[in-house]
Image (cartoon, rainbow, N blue to C red):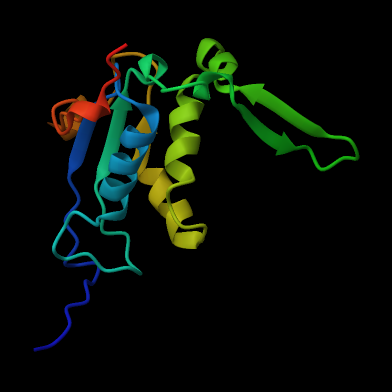
Length: 153
């Protein structure tokens, strides 16, 4: 029996839409990362971009458990003393709340060239509307996959 290795001609990409309203951030990010990478497909090949295109809507209504809303994202400007930080709550209430979901998904992918290419297949929108109706995306209901995916309190 030979090992199957997908070629670009074998890859078939679908469009998936996920509503993030009320869903816990880490669980959402792990499901999105798996779909982007293509690990849910039997034809998964580690060195190929064989995942789906994922659209996440209502990213500003994502939930977090515990005190994670007060935790900081840190980055450095490259200049001496240039460390900066923002809490996740500040980012969610700011101008670009979709960056919290983007960062969570990015950190669940391996840090290489392929993951940077895979991240181009992710579209995140803060509101409920998106410009991808022409691709006729399939709805993936993350809330009903597991009762822990939503926050009860």
